[in-house]
Image 1 (tube, rainbow, N blue to C red):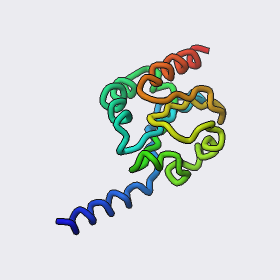
Image 2: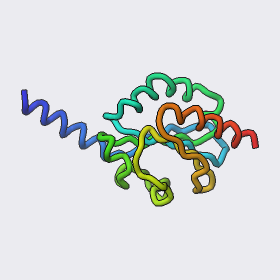
Image 3: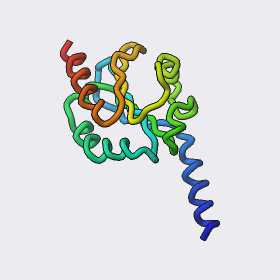
Length: 134
């Protein structure tokens, strides 16, 4: 039984080498919306359960590039190995490398919105709507 649990843990760890999930949007926009979370993050699970499906079905989603960065452990969410090469430079621009779920809006390589927690999602959406309306 312990051996099976160990093998399962090893298998899951090996699949975590793919650091991020890219969900292609039909966007011509230069905006990226980035989600940072951890598999063991209770607030992240709440956001996924209550907001993610609505987000993926939204008209705003169709206008941006969506990138999910998730680590197996919450405490590892800001380790470079989990960040795709194209967004790795953003790590240096973050004033604080903790807090999840985190929602970033990036335009031309610059962070234009940086929100934390499930309540931060509504601010992210408001910021995104303003940016898309420009």
